[in-house]
Image (cartoon, rainbow, N blue to C red):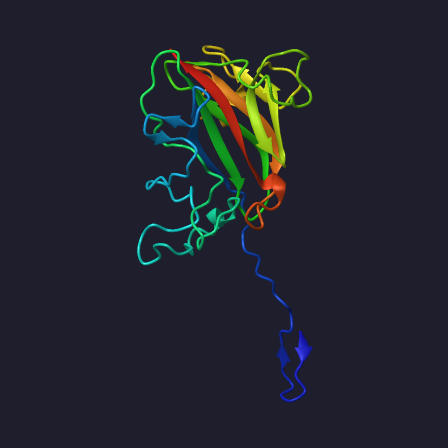
Length: 238
């Protein structure tokens, strides 16, 4: 408080800072990106960008008037997908099909889960979990030809691929020292893993899990480089 020389009264000169709440927000988008090693399946193009009309988070524009074709003022978190540009077309990072077309027993399907840290602060203790579809079997050696990430058992098969922080690395399926794990069907999930897999320890079809730790919030499309990436695995149709 301070004296006002013109009135002899006191006035409050305290500065008050109003801090808006800042929350983490991790956006996930899943696509089918290859079948039998190819990016076409009949008439389906698996390498193109496809906008899911039921999702507000797989593009950087609002499909609902009056903002159609313009940046959505209510979806600022989506504008930081890499290469997202509302003027020059949709984001070309989120490639893949929502529906991959007809498959037959023995066909191998690549599933890609894209992620973006889009909140006001970093997302901490991030574990990504994806359960295999029913009637499909995990392909354990799908990415043996890719550069191996650190920490896994030497010589182990690598069926989990991660693109993150400007690197594309493959990881072992074993529950060993690296950041990725595969839990085969009917193997009960540990409690800390179950939390990431829908809060259930049941595991009827198998589950792929990657522990990414802290992911900083994106500040612009594709920046910083460790604010986004993707997880990929392959499954064979039974």
